[in-house]
Image (tube, rainbow, N blue to C red; front, top):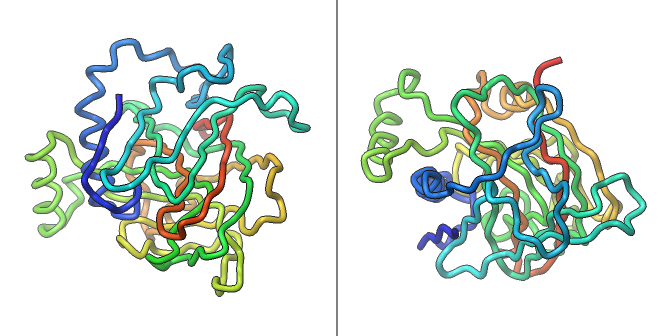
Length: 274
């Protein structure tokens, strides 16, 4: 099942564009009757469960593709990584972008709001020469993982309420109120500052923030483990307490730079407070 949009903006480069796609995604969830059981580790939730799968198998049904009319979609597939010198899984999920943009989204159920951290493994093939952090012309990342947060009407002002109620009337669900992107930035001569832990507002929407987790190509081709405190990062990015999580997504895009890269992901999971 693929969700297509007419927006020429890549995923989450506009919170409104993401809102439309996310609402369409929610409305299609009822059609996914064969959804596989999500594996848990204790009380943690393993979102990207590839155990027992082989290279070339279908991507787990919980991860729904989001594509954009007018933009070539990034190709996502399961890949054999058994020859890697890391302790990552033998089969991993990789995205291959070539002047393209699309993502995969996993919806988090409304009653699952007790997760304090997110963790994942990732690696990239290369960074971009023409990337420009915080600018529309270079707003591409070889890899990103992001979290969307629920809109809560009881906390909204009049203007925000009017906007979000319009979305709900059209699509039956509210779009996310905020999006926190964990990105692997491209460090090059065009970028003034891509320091790790820097937070930059999206050039497309103030409701979307980019938090630099990795920067540059020194570690290209090498698996990196990450763990982030969602609440702490949200407070730094948005100066307030986080609303409940509504979704987790991953993406590799190069539609603005016109370049190409690959990114692989494994062990994406939400973690309870210790």
